Length: 169
Image (cartoon, rainbow, N blue to C red; front, side, top):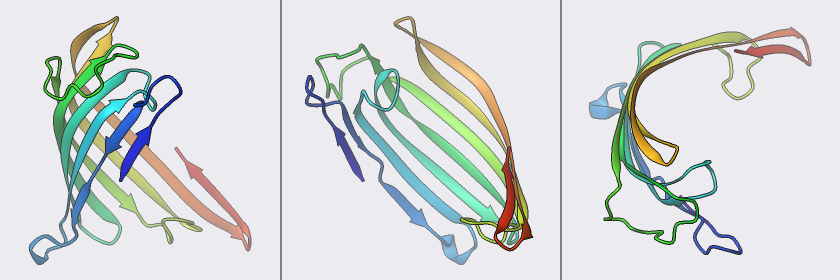
């Protein structure tokens, strides 16, 4: 998919494409592999800070059973933060690009009866990510290294026909 955005003051506010390639059964196994590229030539719409980014990520998911799976992901690329309304929109080979890397692992247990409209069951997922990234702070690019964790719980219970109690934390 390709996204393009413009405004009355600028012909280029957003130019982004994110192609993805999925291999559902690597070498005939249950392992699923996804390779995604992010090519953001200009983003002045979806984020507070203007930036240009070129990155790729590789995600591998292995289901241990029908209800449990583990996903690992590694992504990295180059990002350049820009001043608001900079005139150089497509400086692809200019300096100012900074590297970033993210690695994560996610464990998931989900025994809900339907992923789109569950009526019974529960799910839990836990993830841990190691991130080396750059942020724009007061006009200066600063390197950041941190660990991120998240835990998600969800559940659904059918109380009577037409009434479902659901929660997500």
